[in-house]
Image (cartoon, rainbow, N blue to C red; front, top):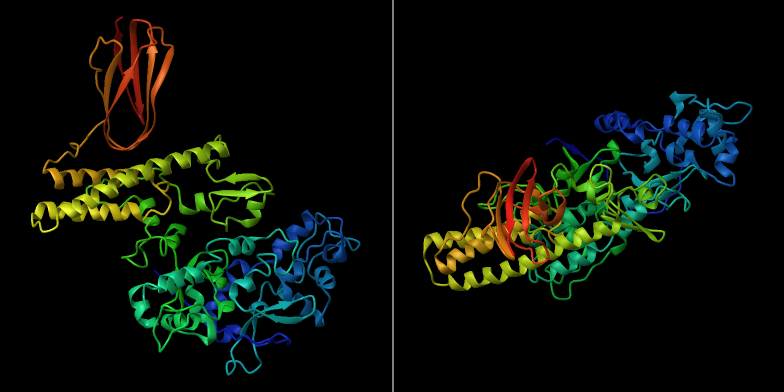
Length: 560
């Protein structure tokens, strides 16, 4: 995994208004400048040209900036543009960098004077003092409206100037607003505070060595106060007594707590990509996929012994004697948790940064379940029902497995049977993995249910000495019902080789469907149903099973 070191991210919390630096950043920060050149922040002029030629055709530069429906493209896409050509207003900069006809933007508007266009320059976000590197830069926004800097307390506040409504209240770019109302954007300080109540008597460094709360709840906290270690950051944001955590430990310096900041997941010098800010090295670890990024904290990729195992459940791996499987193969974390909705919807403006499967907006709800490549015809109500069904099934089985596992643990006190001890350890492993799914059984329903069923099987063996776990199933099968002929009920048995959507339908002799006794996803295993025919006339019927590519039919004979 490639690591990109984060340079000069030292935050000073002072208010300063000054002209932008004219130092050449590439002389010392070559790698960062090269990275910036290839990112979205380093190539913004064409985006503005397309906007002007599209939605703003027919308007003057002044109408675009100051009209009845203003859109200050200069301020966010190239704030330093006002310093070009010996200094200009924003409308003048817009006219200087983009072509007009008779002073009006048209469908033919193009970029001009490209060599002078600043993009989102280094000094758009960093107020660099003239005596740098003796004095270090601060996080600050260069405001093209007054040609002055506004200092920022946190990096997310800086990002939210253009990727949220902090700079322009009427903007439709609302990522930071969504983030601020999400679990990533608030509540982390309180969560860490609760964790610390379990660490009374330990120093911040000892807490970090055992449970690194900073790494996932606020990794960029190490950048605050001129730069700190993880232990120092914990001590900076939470009170201690004589250097240790006590029952009176409480949050402090709360205005500077960064939460899971924008730059926790995005390297700003390579905007548009994903990267994990590693608080132990104060550098970015590049991620191969969004799942890998989520799995740093919502799985065991960063900390192998964590009990937050959503990523592992989604991957469907890690169980003992439980085959790897995925209920929704090919679906990534962000496919469900970063729903964007239709183009003009509020969820689209949020760009998924609520991380919710269901997004409420203007009296309606948008869900990721009915995206085009998943369940496009599923209504929101049906999606809610499906999620609740998964969660209820999981909760019921989880409660049963928990009771039985406790029974087995009590049964094994003082026992030294190595086979049963291993069974107990394996059952505890599978239960902990199922428990680590923080979706209530939705992330990978079939796998979670298989883990819990395996726990129950292992417990039965521990307590009774009898292994009731099913034989290994190597194929799909539909068996002949018994009894046959029957009146009024019969048993239909079948087996599932791998997790599949299973349907069993009953037809009359003319091929008319009578009923569908089975229509659901099922995991590997042997099953049986009791088929009731009290309301059916005597005669010959057929029952057909479909599971994936498998299909088989058998004859039923009802006598009365």
